[in-house]
Length: 326
Image (cartoon, rainbow, N blue to C red; front, side, top):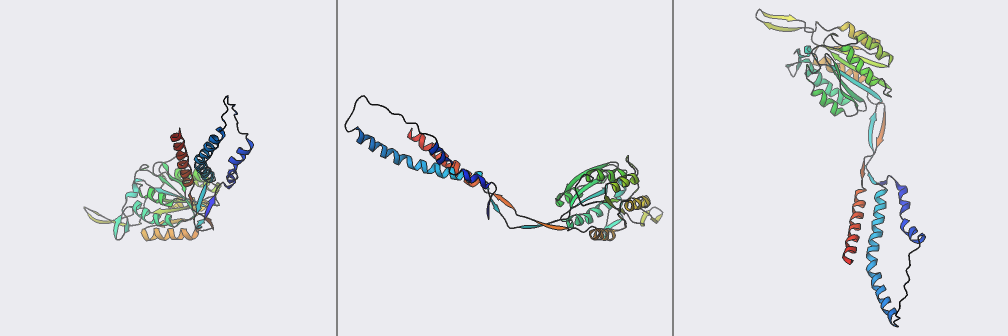
């Protein structure tokens, strides 16, 4: 259907008529020194010809004025109502990019991949399911960076996560700074629910704020933190002396991650492989359900350019006609 954004401007349509009646016309009376008896016949014939010549520019000007007023009223085409789920939740992902994330102890389609690749694979599907949430992305290593501010554009968050590379933020792990940055970005948001999902494979080895202190700030600002420790407990390493089993997650500080999560009302999860990581995200969908209520919006398409363009063309045509007459 067609909708006018500013319909009150339509009351200006009769404005030219009002001006015509209110403003007195300028009449110049000239006295002729020589009176010709049949001069009136010439004047009447000339007046009739002039009237006919002026009629069509007047009609064009009238149509142009109507089109101009319609354009000023800003006509729009309203599409069908589109349902949009709104959760009222602000959800931030904090992903570790330290050097230890290069460890290839995860498998996708029976092929060994590094930890960051596994996180990207599973987290992308999780982000895509968060319809109605505002999602943001923090990347951290030696320092923490806000890669994506809170947005409903989940596709952009997915793209920027896929473009993240190991070592981009340094080789160490600043867990406390990552939590502090998330608190800073979320504390002033008018949200019913604030959630941080932090993924790391190590311990806090850098940064200015300890994870426990950052968790206290998060709890004070009603930010719930879910921590995920990634990395296998055991893997076989080939060497000159034969195969041997090692623990690739020996540096993972699970005690701190548990305390951080519990102090903010969240939970700690352990992801030793891709299946466990995927199950954790599925569980997070249940713990933090997406849809809270529904809103509707109607897509709008501006139509004012059409009457405005036609009005401009008519004005140019009138000007061209006057130039020819002159």
